[in-house]
Structure formats: C-alpha cells, structure tokens
Amino acid sequence: MSNLGGMPTSADADRPSVYVETYGCQMNVSDSELITGVLSARGYRSVAAPQTADIILLNTCAVREHAEQRVAQRVRHLIGQRKGGRRVRIGLAGCMAQHHREALLARIPGLDFVVGPDGYRHLPDLLESEEAFAEVRLDKTETYDDIVPVRGESVRAWLTIMRGCNRFCTFCVVPYVRGRERSIVPEVLEEELHRIAAEGYREVVLLGQTVNAYRSGGTDFGDLLRMAASIDRIERVRFTSPHPADFDDSSLAAMRDCNKVSPYVHLPLQSASDRILRAMDRGHTVDEYRRLVDRLRDTVPGVALSTDIIVGYPGETSEDFEATSSMMEEIGFDHAYLFKYSPREATRAFKIEETVTEDEKSERLARLISEQEARSLHINQGLVGHDVEVLVEGPAKRQKHWLAGKTAHFKTVVFEPKTTPVDAARALGELAKVRIEAATSHTLRGVEID
Image 1: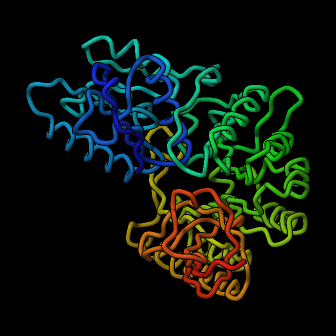
Image 2 (image 1 turned 90 degrees about the horizontal axis):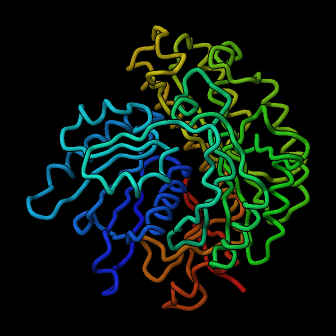
Image 3 (image 1 turned 90 degrees about the vertical axis):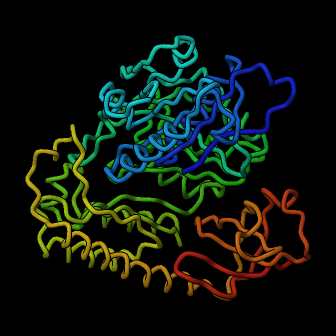
C-alpha cells in the first residue's frame, strides 16, 4: 500500500483536498499518479492523510480475493470514521471497482462512488455532483497520453507504456477490468521520459500488463528500451512485467547493447507442468520457457531472474507441483512471488471445480517459500566480498546513519556510508560503490568504498 499527498500551503486553503491510497501492483501506483494529475489540473490539492481530505480515494487491486477483502475492510473503517459536519466523500478506483462495478455501492453502505481504470479523466466532472456514481465503462482507445502524472518524491519513476491485456490467461481478471491492449505512441513516451529526467528521477520503470508486447507503428519494445536508455540523467531502465511468449530478438538485443537497461528480468512462470500451462492458456511450454532463460543468460551474462508461481490451480497434481519445485531449483531464481490459486469471478477458470484443498495449497506454498528462501540466501551470499553499485533511495530503516538502495540487479542493499552522519536528502539518487560484507535471503549489507 502507498499514498500520494503533500503539505498544503495557505494559498491552497480554498481548494478541495484529495487523499489517494494505493493497493496492488506498480500499474496501480502509476494510475494513482495519473489520478492525482487529473485532479490537480482541475484545482484539487493532495493531502497526506485521510483525516484532512474532502475526497478519499482508494485505488484498488482485484487480482486476488485477499486484496479485495483488505480494501473492503479499509473502506468500511474509513466510512465508520466519517463524522458529521464537513462532508467527506469516499470512493474506490481501479481494478476492484471495475470488477464489481455498481454492486459495490450496494454492498458497502456509505460508499460514494466507484471509478474504473478508464474513467479517471471524468472524475472532476463527476465529483461536481453530490450524487453517488459508478463510472466503469471500458474504453478501447483510452491511454491518458495527454495527462501529466503527479509523481511522488523518489529516485524511481513509473512510466506506463501500454494499457490492457490480450492474453486472457484463464486465472487472470486483468483483461476484464483493464480491457484490451493499446500502446502509447513513442513520441508521447519520449516527451515523458525527458520530463522524468528533468524532474530528477534517476531510474525509470516501463510498465504494462504484458510490457514487452508493446507495439506502436514501427516501434517495438526493444526500440523503446533503446529510447529510454538514450535519455541523459536517467541512469537505469527497468521494465515489468514481460510475458515469456512476447520476448523477441529486438528486446534481447536492446538489453545486451544498452548498459542502462538493468540486467534483471521478472519472468512469470506460474507452473512448470505443461498440462497446467495449457489449462492456464499461458501460450508457452516449459521447454520454451527454459530456452528463453538460456537465451537471456547467453545475451545478458549474470542477469538476475525472478518469477511468479501459482500453486493449487484446479487439476494440479502432486507430480505437477514437484515439477514446479524442481524447475525453480533448476533455473535458480533470485527471487519469487509465490501465491495460492484464488478463483476470480469473470475469469474462465472461475467455474472450474477446484481439486486442491486449502490445506494442500498452504502446504505446497509453504514448501516453495522455504525452498526459495534458501535459494535466495545462497545466491546472495555468493555476493559477499564483491563490489556493487547502489542507487541510493534514502536512509536505512533500522541502521541509524546508514543508507539503502538497489543494485542494477534489483537487490536491496543497506550500507554504512564513508562518512557519518550523512545528509540523506543529498544522497538520494546518488550512485554509491559498496562492498558487500553480509547477506540474508532478502538484503545485502555492506560498506561504501572509494
């Protein structure tokens, strides 16, 4: 969860205030910045806490049932905190709003509005009415390419290069709540990349549901990587999340040729059983995935890999699960996001009878987590004694006077700077050379060197 907001000034006193709270993936973070941009252009000011807001908006995720339950609990709490006197309007935006549409207004008494991912530009006009509303129409052409996002303070900028998804994996609700693929034209993206650099961001992350499916005229995803890497003052370029079936030679060549493109790929696998992959309609086989990993490692030596895995998909046998466990060990992922299958209404898998009990799902998930923790620890310990370049993101959370940041391989590093105390604001966005002295499965620890 994250929130966008700032401190109001005296000149802002008469402007309506909005608090945006974000749940879910990086696409939702990017959309919250977009929403803030839309509302800011119409006179709204951002605030950092719901207690001071005229409008409270929760930007939501619908990928898993647990995420929706968490948001529903949060919005009911906020509604319960609303007191008489000043009118505070509370709404839901994003994927959960699109998933359940008008039903949310009846299901959550006191909720004032819901708006889907294609309705953000209409928010200012809709908020002028005191009536409850649901703006949940999908728009085949909406890309918000004329909206300037309001980004938070960070070294990292999110840049949505395409919206929607054409894949329709059987377990995934995203195509139903975000619509079909549409790519933003490269001229708009180039202008936004220059704006990102001018605003002082040192890293840009290109976003899309299947980001490497980007196509606009004669420009493909590899061309876009090269464009981003050519921008002065941007030091690192990352992207998420690619689809294995959309990785082509152009993208691989750009990763090879552009030093600014991080040697890190999040490559969702979901299962290492061909039978389950076919049932999921993933569009690739286990062997095709394996060959892609080989090509990535041949093209970008030392590339770090992470993945997504779902356990307990309907029909998954113990043999299927063992195949997934074995392949995770074979590939040697640096990190993995591991989940139990969660049936989502409107997906093709929703009506399929589940064959794996919750207890079995939990056992399988716990085992993969344990195996991955050990694997990540082993990989990270192999970096002890090595020097890495860290993009400083701010002070470390636990170690006083230490700094924290990410390597090009997207590993978290906390380190002791050369001199203390350090000016953390000055250090933000600097590149520090750090010698790694210790490692856990999630974090590297070190000391800054000359």
